[in-house]
Image 1 (cartoon, rainbow, N blue to C red):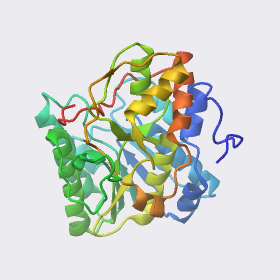
Image 2 (cartoon, rainbow, N blue to C red):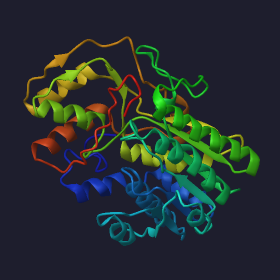
Image 3 (cartoon, rainbow, N blue to C red):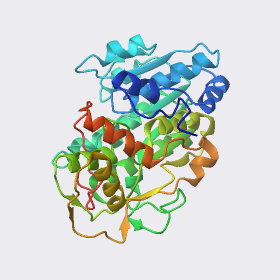
Length: 349
């Protein structure tokens, strides 16, 4: 896509403009929403990606001429998110997914996007991490027996791979590092079991790492550079994907659920160099960059080839994201204050 394409603006003006871009359905999403039958329920809609993914499902369905319910489920414990989702055409339900009785009372839906889980703050709360990431999914899988299930997971289930390898593929053996990653592999195993046991066609999405203006690997790096903090190079390489592209691929995976469960890596096509990315961000921000340490020979990397073949190509490359992010930071745009901790090599978050 060229910069003259309105889908790829030169700058992102504000949060309203950003959220419109993040929820704008691609032609592939519109086609998928047109083929899909039944309502969609998004469990854990209150996270970083949930609101724009749910809104994209609404917009894609409307563009396809399909009338369906898109239901967002979360505790909605603070802020105005519930009101905003309702405004955008997403029906909302307050629910603590750890309450099995409340899960059993959720409305039926032929299509489920499961986004709930725990990552940040897991160190010191390991028992809650395992409950959230392995026990609660069982109650959800039983409630929606026979439904199409798209389940969020993470590339953290893979071991570190050589930086020049192209990243781990879906057929590679997992090798989680740390309790968070191990619990995410546990979540996958729970949904794989119930896919077979209850004949629930399922797709597992191993995502790393989604980026928009308010959070993500590139935002973490840019903010450190802007604030004059040193950049640790130990995790010297990463995958990043523009969140609109990730949302689109995830919704399109509803076309590719199966029994046994399918697995897709959802990542950007580039293995970015942290060093080179920081130098580029420093140039865009007008700031010097201070590095600490050296790049290890391996990193947490995934290969997205299968996802591009089945779920569509990405539309925004890393350099364009960096241009947007630098402009956003220079004009003091809103951020979520939720660092990815992508640099962790010991699996502690």
